[in-house]
Image (cartoon, rainbow, N blue to C red):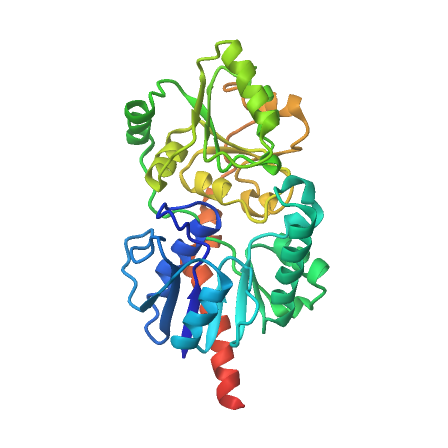
Length: 368
């Protein structure tokens, strides 16, 4: 069986990327361990792929695409064919002449288009094509039960057609003490801090977090790329600068190693999102042994469970209390369920679900 992987989700500037790109790299590092399948990675020119996030070397074939367009992918599949195409981004291109299986991370744009930087016509086209890919797929992978329900709702397909994979987080954990020294030396963060990690965009709800944090004695670190529609966040940051809040740190460019060290060094990792299809930052923070205060929306309750604090993302007062170290109306101590995080979420388990699904297609084709 030959399985192709559409890796046009990787940044063409050669950077590591975040979100879906990060998840695709982590998952591929486990998939490649299965040598019973022939793998072909379709990678756009400029993207960094052969060395996966864990350091595993890709053992399959790598086909470089001239660019990240659908046309380039179709040409590559024609000259370097596969039996089935796995699509980590979840967006199946038009004109693919082999069965394509998407890995869906969220459908938030369907419920909240106002959070995204797309014009009406562009959004209508991309969402229509997205649903088309889901409906035509032999089955679909979803990162959470929450995302599975969204797929069923919007694509109107049966529940039996959707397999939940979850995600695995980061298994290369850092020691908190060495992580704090790392952050002191590289970023100049000398005091205990609250960390918010990820691309700045409306659903991350970071303007509320900044306002709530002002009552805290901890520093605040917002790490991640500038995104879109971030005027409210820029406004709050400008106020901090005017107030000379030197306890605020903005880190727009970070590597995977920086992220790992920040998660381990933080006193609290805050995830105040208005919606999340999974919640990888919360998972990685819990794996690092760091206190997590997260929103009670989207898939975050699935991921965090009783291992962290879940709050209404619109309750600014509750967040202000939770971000205050020491005695607080909201306890930040773990309930002893930290171990369930490692048992439930791992890239090996995610890969196992994906491999079982892909093998089922091979069995069906042999029977027919």
